Length: 294
Ligand code: PMP
Image (cartoon, rainbow, N blue to C red; front, side, top):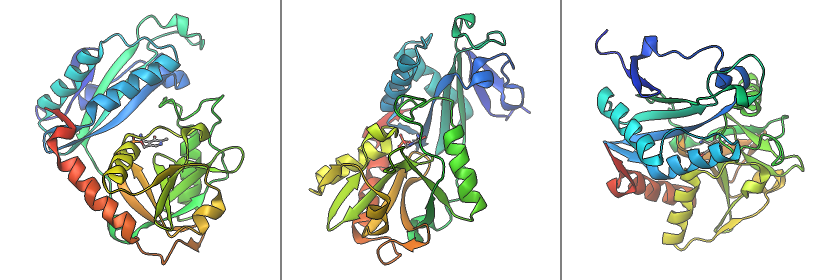
């Protein structure tokens, strides 16, 4: 078992099969914690600084004091990756409220639990990037900004899980979440963009969507290519009648959307602007300047 992957928990490394936390951890009991999903490409952790900054912002919002400095957290990620000698891996960074009792009061949890998991990424995208994916609007509304908003990347993902279940039950690749007034928020773990008449549109985070790091890369690429990116509310109608649409996310990267609730988007094929952005996006992830070397 010497070649088992090693998982970092509170400064110690454990083989994957032994990497366990208590059932009294409030991350498990109450979803009380925050996390990040990060990717490493060719020995470089893509946008690690941005992910760590976001982790600390999420923690701040739930008044969780992470017991490591950002530098120490960066080191923990790099050290875990070095130990595991993976190539093109996925990193899951979790900070939970920690061990407490059965009551939900966070004051009962003196020490947050810090976990770094690195593993192979197993996303069976198939030919999704070439042909696009099918989607549907979920019946479950995104949690509003004055509730467990997805602006906080918290361990509360039931909202997304419910939407995903609905997509699965309907034989659709991915769900799209609307916010309470009916405008589009995001996917279950992706931000969404539409293209109309040569301009690109994406919803604001005030829909309860996460400020995506991949979405930021797309924004940068748009700037570079002199393409207008407009952040505004998007209605379901605007997606039905878009020329092109795509998702962005760490796991999915950039994926064209070809259908929503059985309406074909554009001509049903990845559009020219989406393809152009995907090409540029690829260059960004391959550029070692855009991350932290292991
Ligand atoms: N929205 C949600 C709810 C997510 O979980 C994610 C994945 N982190 C995204 C959007 C995309 O964000 P990013 O590009 O930073 O992965």
